[in-house]
Amino acid sequence: MSGTTIPRLVIAAPSSGAGKTTVATGLMAAFAEAGLSVSPHKVGPDYIDPGYHALATGRPGRNLDAYLCGPGRIAPLFLHGAAGADLAVVEGVMGLFDGASGQGELSSTAQVAKLLRAPVVLVVDASSQSRSVAALVHGFASWDPQVRLAGVILNKVGSDRHEELLRDAMDSSGVPVLGALRRGEQARTPSRHLGLVPVAERRAEALESVRALAARVRAGCDLDALLALARAVPELTEQAWDPAAEAAGAAADESGTADGSTGPAGAGKPLIAVAGGAAFTFSYAEHTELLTAAGAEVVPFDPLRDERLPAGTRGLVIGGGFPEVYAPELSANAPLRAAVAELAATGAPVTAECAGLLYLSRSIDGKPMCGVLPADARMTERLTLGYREAVATADNVLAAAGTRVRGHEFHRTVLEPGAGPSPAWGLTYPQRRVEGYVSGGVHASYLHVHWAAEPSLARRLVASAARGARAEAVGGAR
Image (cartoon, rainbow, N blue to C red):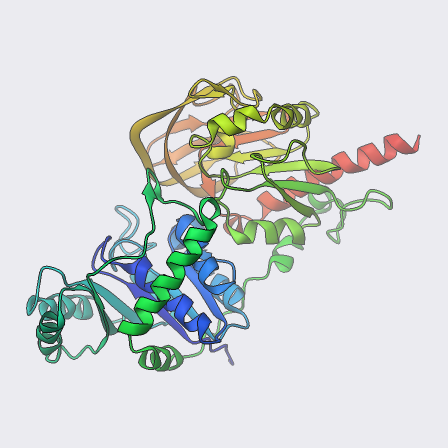
């Protein structure tokens, strides 16, 4: 079977904090500045790093999460995202072999590297070692023979003499050193309670940071050797993931008609508004692609700036982000809060994840929000983080009863009460509990779900919006 060859590298590390994001983003930017079309990818569920990757490359940052999407979808999603690229750079998560808790290698960088048959470049924090670096690298190179550890980039090197000692030690390891970055001044990438501050909140400064990372990597790494390594990869024989093919599986009562169109003449495509801007930055690129393929017209809006929903809105998607940071500004935009509440009151499909859940609540830290849900949110010191398994407890605009999904929670807020009379999900792992709200056309939850793993979510949402549009078209024709 013939396949597809996309030059590719996986950037990993022995642990978090070694400099994966610095090196991966710098490599993406350096190769893009050299004229290559670079496809950026991130292992795991993180939304923030892909924003910097997109800024570095001019292509959407995409996630590869084997827990959320299943191992069988990793190569197809990669091939979809990297189509037409000269090079793909995949930033790992945590340590190379760290995955979902208690699940072996599942969702680890090592597993993704094996699924992609891609060489791994290990970023090592060398700041407090010299000869020991060879033992460390030897251990990672020999732990799993199916993982090809093809090179090392030494990070946080103190001096020329320190680099010389490190390179001498690595000579006996059999793993080539492909770069060495000094410990000096780092590019400024400020952090907050959930990680780096997203690109959308500091675009000009983020662009400057990315350029600085490119300059550091260009000066300290052998880009020619890295590119040669990326090009010496086998074909991938899997078929690329196709949002149109996924959407085409809709039944007539889900997507409007058996051919996937959205309704009778005159109804047109249902318009689904998707929240964005600085307060709502968490979104997977495949979600918009699935909505579009299912027959929707997708229009972004910014709840910090826009006082109205896009004209003709028939459905609403409010993803994750940082509404707690922007609570005063969101609250001050009373016209939009009223418009959201009015849309929800009509029964139009409204789906909200995490930040969207809070925005639909009565208040965040005492600041009035949309008031769609009878609940109030507040910041806490406790981080809620981890993978979840869940089942839809009843039919709703997003999922049919019994639909099983895998998701991820990531927040420092608490919603009280945490679930309504009709919960959004019944969680089954790691503990059993109900969570979120289903009311009319509203589905709101803390759970982040990757729709590529369950395309019926997008189809069902678009179908509900289409039915609303058709009903209005029929009513208007009378």
